[in-house]
Length: 389
Image (cartoon, rainbow, N blue to C red):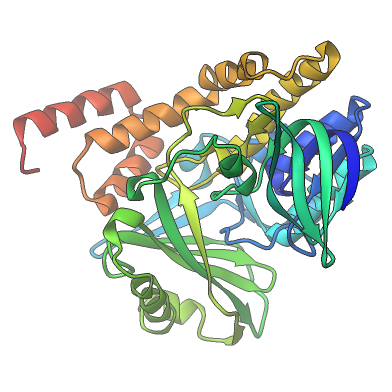
């Protein structure tokens, strides 16, 4: 079996993995970025970039499909149009195709000096003397070992790297959502980009649906909390109904020339208690760094990658890759964006409001800039005073 050495082994060439690989390579460390697919970005994702992503990470305009200044919200009884400034407070968001966006990020990492290995599927972490010392992977019908001073698990929801190192606990259904998605290719390009969000049981059981505009047409999907599903066929049937019979959606996609095969994905909505151990750090979906109210994780993944990269570089400079040192990352994350995600989850858990109503409530909060503390207090009062609410 071939064995190679490096300073940093990053598994997963998504937004988190690419940012870590780029930063570590720019600092002069031998960094290898691994991707299980033949190209980065082949995953279920609506492909929406929040304004802060575009602003803080200087996204190349060439990877953007449409700038978004309006959101259409559809429920059983109401339709509303929200401006991007109402949703985010400033500027407009954008849509992109993940295969193009992730490829751009990977190219940036390679330009900085990182080596990219595609079609490389991680089999497990290598454990030596109680520390993660690298990874074992399958690539081009052969198995290889890469020994690393620091291993970065950026390989998604069911992280093989972190799980084989014993870092990820067993998931319960309350810890994730399930999404089902298709690409809709239209005969003629869209005149303008508008995001459509559909809430309620008419879309899928206790879930939601979405249409994100792309150059080829739309990315269409439905999703649900895992606790509300007994069978994934519920989502499959829900997506078909969504595209074929929903009065608004079916009209928007009526000139489709082709619709891709569906893809399924799990989306974490709970942060993991521990983000690192001896020789290993987790980031992005592998760390549960996703908003429980929107399912969006790109911004959190990229910001977490910035934080963990700083700690990795310090670890390499000092030669200390112990969990005690690497948990500086855990601490820094929890007092920054981790704090926000934790509060979102507390709000989510303390309320017995139906998921549809919860989503509408969050839109109301964003639109009217209502204090999150006031909302938390109100929900607490409702739950205490009205047990059957």
